[in-house]
Length: 610
Image 1 (spheres, helix red, strand yellow):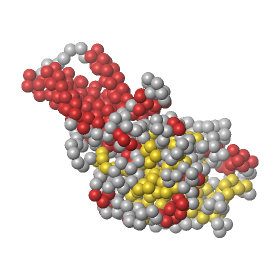
Image 2 (cartoon, one colour; image 1 turned 60 degrees about the horizontal axis):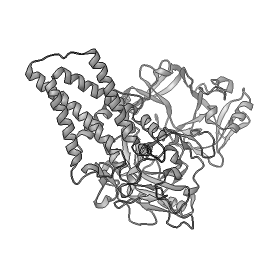
Image 3 (cartoon, one colour; image 1 turned 120 degrees about the horizontal axis):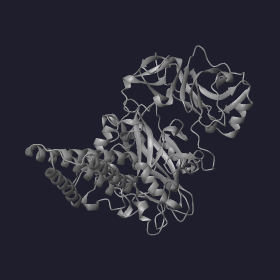
Image 4 (cartoon, one colour; image 1 turned 135 degrees about the vertical axis):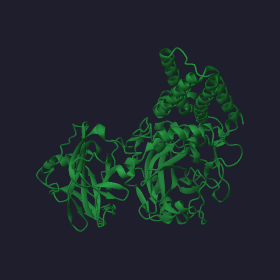
């Protein structure tokens, strides 16, 4: 109730002040407030990371770290508004007079608009500091009741301002990030349901535990799936485990139930294994994480609609420090928190999310820190056909051992370095028809395209385009998108990364020693060889796309030049192989560059034309 009074005071006072100052002045102020809000949301994450980085772990300024996400939004808003008001007041020192009725009415409307934006940003900012979940009588999210008990949902009981300032502001700027104020990384894509985010962060143990973690306080070590991403499994069959025979009921933030609602009947389970170190500890010496403080953002491949999900279970140590045993614990009751066991310096936890069919993971948030998952999506560390296979791995302790691909996070939350100290590299061989960039219809140059599904695919051709003319494509109508290579139902696209700084030293040395006049090929388990149909190349000035199945790459000399001394150059080969074969080698002539025989890559169909 107190938060309601605060917002009423802010909106009411702003409305009254600008009602008395006239329509023109109020309009100018509304424009300044609107622009300041856009600036604040635009720089919110980098400024918050800066507070996290420079705030000391102890001492007088230590609380700055716990307020970083709130300050990262509020401070830029206040500074931007002050600067904009100063510029406007200098350029427009005098007011323009209207009819008294227009001045009062117009001033009131513009003042109310400015008040709503200011109050909304204040509510969101205050909600992201270390305060209790129901601080000032406002709790935008809570644990649901009924069959899906334990799920994190929008507050359904008690007083809720779910259609007021924070929701209005979050919805407005999210929508504008896809339309009028569209950027290459729109806020709506990375932060769906933003108005629920502050309340979820505050769902901390005892209402007082930490709501932030430093980017170097944990590392993502692996990710696994249960089920089949290409062939969705019913959630009623996936949300089970050997510890509880009854299927778990879970719901989304909007209260829709997995396994019951039409668009949530089937999918797969995505699990993310993380190791938390001493920098993530509470003062008690333990690491404590609640389900609201871990969020997975997934994206629909068809319409690029993002959805925020919270975990339904966690795999971690049993409460016995004398042995390294793991079990799966469901989030099926209120106030279930995961804590580290004993005094170990590190704690391993794997959070599981039900992902609806047609969605793919985009980003993982842990107490605000974002880990970009786009480059880690195609090759999970492990795939379990069903929950029983996963449970067997848990009992065997394999969850704790899945750390071979885990990167350390940099201060922006992106994975950049493996635990052993090697440079982080995306999966070098992936099965996907995606080009990795998006062209707009009309800008394809000499590339021939064909319509596949709702969008367009490259059929053949070669084209170079300036880097600054290529965008991420988010918010672009599918009818205008060219973002994949065309293929047929009986073939599959396989991409092989040759970029030196995305490969290890051994691979680069093999490439440099290979016969430059030999043909680069993929080889399947039957010994069938597949030449490269083309490439995707990028440097500081241009993208270069080539795709021609009728005239494949004959030698290494035919490829754009990349080297370890040219860090701005990236090259990926594009192969067309028979569908469902097992790829066991990537070679150049007699030199095997990638031996995949121990873990063949299944060339699953990548769609296309019949």
